[in-house]
Length: 400
Image: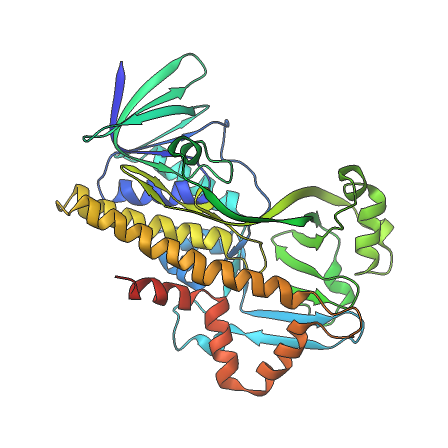
């Protein structure tokens, strides 16, 4: 027996759940499928920027996320050798944004919150333990073959959204190229409940630490500090995940790295890639399935949420208001792919380069730039609007 729905979404991460719940709230029948038995507990993304907070407020979930996260109106750039600290206070852009802070809240908390609400919505359904195998599309819709714990099922939909991550099955079946590059080094993320803040006066919940030897990022979420560091290309997985590496990383931050206990150690490749198209007929890509970038600045999850918001608005115009599908979906592709290339890719590459100090210098390029911002309110205001992704949303609106 073939199930039918207006929209089928593959992938119950933050992008897929935002898209599914927003469609359901609009009165559009949606099925969300996820191969795991629950929303994946991915520890990579934890920062939500002001435009994303506006969207989540419209979905009616922001207050609950704020209660489950930490506000970070101030973020810092610190030099571990010189001890210098440059702080940026997002209340300075309160004249432009409704929520002048970053919210530090792990992405799985957002996904699980929305999945729970979707499961009880009249227009929503979530199927865990269901994996998309293949699909065929025609002029009227998409026929999807989905593996469940008991059988291979068929789901017929008007539109299919691939929000199924970097290794997207949806993208691979379309044959869309995933253009870009992979950094030679990997990134290591460690989490700990050790009180790192006890060793730094006024340590912000988001702090970028650099010196001539190595940079790292300190991000605080409720109950834990998350530390992100780059690795050397020649280091093995076993070495990077070892106690010795953990101790070496924390020795650069606190007096006794050996005393630090970790809750997670995650190693991953870092990519800068954008799909050649975000649309293949009635099949759409969003989030990591459509674009990947390094994590410096916290743009990955947020830009995926912005994809979902843009796309669901256009599907509403098509399915409820009789809008011209080709024109609207081509517009989605132009807007979001342009933003991914011009803003997200370019800005994250600059952010990474800025953190990497010249070995002959005591200061990173970022620190030198921050000193200029500290002395110039107008430059500082513009920089924070860029880093808060306000300018990327404005750029999207300009694209016809």
